[in-house]
Image 1: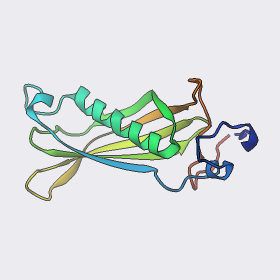
Image 2: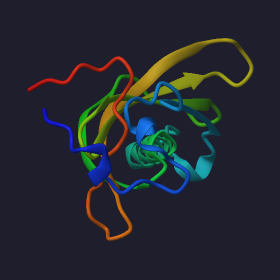
Image 3: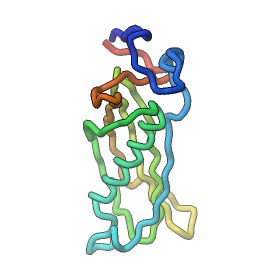
Length: 153
């Protein structure tokens, strides 16, 4: 994959071309919520759509922190619910940028269920989101390469 010349890129304010070479930090975001009754179904578990909304929000935060640009969700892939998420539990969303393209970031989001009054914690669901960075003109714009990532043709 060919990278555009650094001189041709529109950079966020305060960013040097060197910043686009790799971004070893800000690739992970953690967000914690409580599952309240208003977000549950008649089984007393978190609505699937609510879980997706929380996960998309965490992916958005991780991608925005990573590239410091406007981002939009382009694709959701490989969503898997492994267990019900009961009302009254804590959920921690761990969102990690795991791959970058020219203007896209692939973010893995894992939702962990924690019992409120114990140390028990388990994976409730996971999904992969692809977000695209946008420039001021609303068009896709280059993002920093993920540190340690090798380009695949």
